[in-house]
Amino acid sequence: MRVGPLTVVFASIVAAACGAAPSGPPGTQGIGGPVGAGGQVDTAGVGNGTTTATTGFVDKTLVSGGETFSYKVFVPANYNTATTVPVILALHSSGDRGSDNLQQTQTGVGRVVRAAPATFPAIVVFPQAPAGDVNQSHYAFVAIAQIALDLTLTAYKKSDLDRVYLTGHSFGGIAGFDIAYVNSTKFAAFVPISANICVECITGSGATTNAQASAIVAARLKRVPTWQFQGELDTNVPTGQVRQIRDAFVAVNATYTYTELPGSGHYIWDGIYDGPDVWAWLWAQHR
Image (cartoon, rainbow, N blue to C red; front, side, top):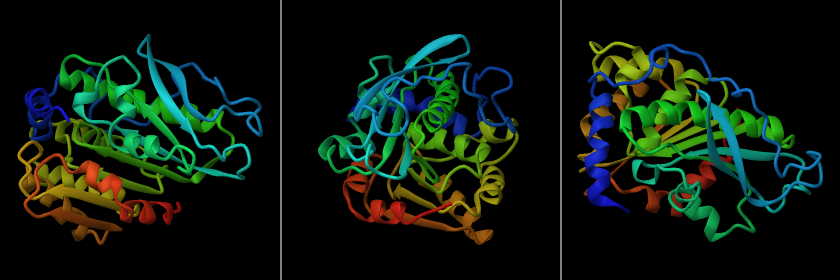
């Protein structure tokens, strides 16, 4: 957990989430649709899609914007004998950005998978955002993550398309809201942790308030089961903004649960992912 550097770099994307103009490339903001498969289908390790897939962590690559990025896919030990397998898109925090294609699998969901690789029951897609300007990284991450998920669903024929889940913490949770918004019928459930909304990413307008953007997102995602977690004392992602998201979801009678941890700050995700409650809830969700 990198408290110092993460706090500094994360401030920029928090500013974007508060409505300041992010420096994303044209066409990435507002109401853009889902990203395509980047012109490349990476089938490394999938065998014939039926009985010969490589299990464990498998290295993958994808192409986005003319650049090649690495990502990892965890394939559960029972993949070759299972009929169908759920899929999780797991999005990391700002401190795990880079190009080593490793750090993003050692935190968050990755910690849970590495603690019990023989029994973890799902395919997990682990994209990694590039280092550099945090706003540019955000837009790149949103694109990379969607491509990585689509490539995985295409390559792994046993993927259960009715049990595709999305979760992210901090920087990854903010990206998760973008991805959920433009793929509102793809996911069976969404678990954002310590995350608010990048207002301009969603609306394309710097004049939109957090409350207005929250209402737009809630209307789109009202039928996507969502369980949002937030620390009461979080100052990296202001809890007041997250409560506005909560209020917007509640106002449209969404399938939504909000859990605020009293006395806790920003770094709450390890405790949430380590506990059984969120997993029992997640596995029960079907599209």
